[in-house]
Amino acid sequence: MNIENMEAFVYVIHYGSFNKAADALFLSQPSVTARIQSLERELNCRLFDRIGKQVQVTEEGKRFLPYAQQLLQIYRKGKEHVQYKKQLPNELRIGCTVSVANYLIPGLLPAMREKYPQIRFKLQTGTTDELAAKVLNKEVDIAFSRPVNHPEIRSVKLLLDPIRLHVYEGHPFLREENLSIEAIGDEPLVFFECGALDWLRIHRVFESLNRPPRIEFQTDNSETAKKLVLRKAGICFLPGICASQEVAEGKLFPIDFPETSGISMQTCLISFQGEHTEIVQEFASMMKSRTGV
Image (cartoon, rainbow, N blue to C red; front, side, top):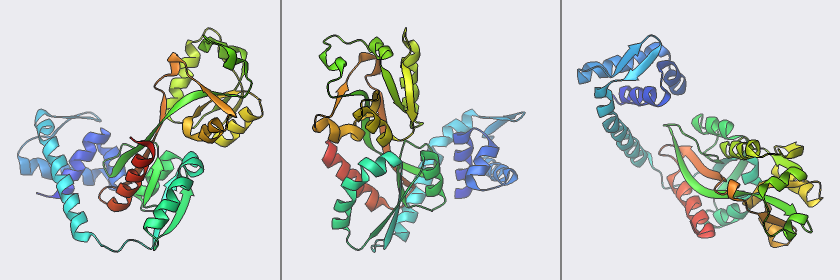
């Protein structure tokens, strides 16, 4: 049984179309169709119903899917084992979002350097979509990003960071015992927008209020947002890791509301399936020892 045929089968189900699967596999759409047809002949059954431009997995396809996924996983693990080299790379190319570069990486790399003194570390920043593309194209070895869902990418959860309202020292909110989230409508708001889905949940909270907040400053840079709050230009919803030092120093103060409870920013470590396993595990272990999760 051809492993490439099973890979095409899994990709078509994941992406929901032959065209999208072809793009992800860097193949033509007829090539993907040919691989599926070859697999159907081997299995002597139809795996997809084709209704116009839409494809729908058949009952036989649904039953075969977990076995195809398992076979692909076994193949990749076997390939990794055969190709594994004890000698680590001389240079590790790391991609990361700007916030990770500012707040997470500086605390991790010195420890990694101590454990792997022979490795040089090369960093570059980008958005999650850009970093995922770089991992797939082998332009970076690993990347710290928001969660990524792709069959060729392994995604390991590292950090779940609550997003909370932060105010500056002496702000009137700190004297309120029963503060309602409606009160933010009276204050100038700095809005840090990173593009992650969690920020859409913050927007939905705003839309549910009787008085929408006055967003006077909007930025995609957490450092800029934080410094505006420190200068008392407004208050801001920020990830905890961004403001941890200022909170410890008594310069910023987090405030919790039931309406925003559970809204967090998730950071994952992504890599190409089956590659750089030791490095990924070491970073994950470091984060676990630091955060206790």
